[in-house]
Length: 179
Image (cartoon, rainbow, N blue to C red; front, side, top):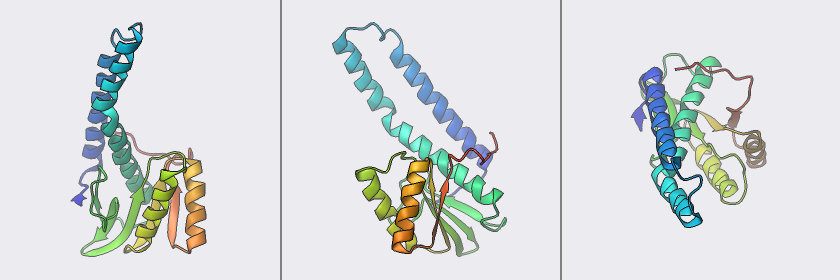
């Protein structure tokens, strides 16, 4: 895990990543709208290869930043907490996506998903993630980005007796600071 540092700097980095993706998409689209079918499909394949992983990881990174803002705005954790994260979901299986610490004490452990529908593999992954999170130190939060994911996560939390709070970051009543 790495220390988060300045939220402003993290958001600027995400914003730069987003602009880079849009520029790649714009470049890939140039002249492809009326291309022959083979060329159009090959163009889509090239676009997917160039942006697919970043599309997922940028959303994950941004959702973690929104989770930090939610925790700060709701006083879910001490204002003195230092935030640690795995911004690109590359953490150890024993590490959460996000941890809030004061000194050596973990006050908060959180997992974040940007999946929108809890179906198939996503539903099974959610069950595994919640089980993993339930064993972590501090208050436990599972941040999602859709009402469907929130409903399914709450069902799993209740049926397993976990002490995990599920937070839907797509809730329009939640307002976040801009860059």
